[in-house]
Length: 234
Image (cartoon, rainbow, N blue to C red; front, side):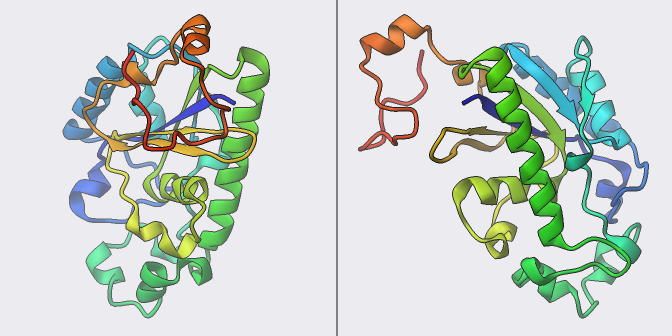
């Protein structure tokens, strides 16, 4: 199966002000634009078979700066969680709400007033990336890499699914602005290849030529390398 690169959008004005943007049309600030440009320099080393994005403007702006030659496809399943009446509120105010500790410690039970359940957000995001991954694999082969630009909680939920952990553990995962997280799906299980990468060399994510892999007597794609393996050096 293909490898998914999850890109979180760059920092926004709401991030900088300590607010919960939700689905509001907030845009990147100066720092966010610089972050998007910087991650684009690293992504140049990666041949991307497809680029998809949340429909929100902060994700589209990030891709316009990072991958100006790309033609991203909008995927509604990657949109930010619908935080309902929490949207646009300062986080320090929301931290006093009775729902706050539920969101922190038992998010699978959290339903935002007038909005979406976190479990529903996780389910539609995971379904979206798995569907896209199967499509990319079918069209471009198992060595393909593709990119999806989305939001912090959405990315954390997808990572939790890849790790096989309950959604209640997803708050332990970090996805910084403009970070790259890589997940390689296989027929039996996913592998988390990178997490919250804000400066690493992304070229090592490109699979080596098939002949080289055969010479290395590579184990089955769904098997983990016992002992940790040799890493992604090329």
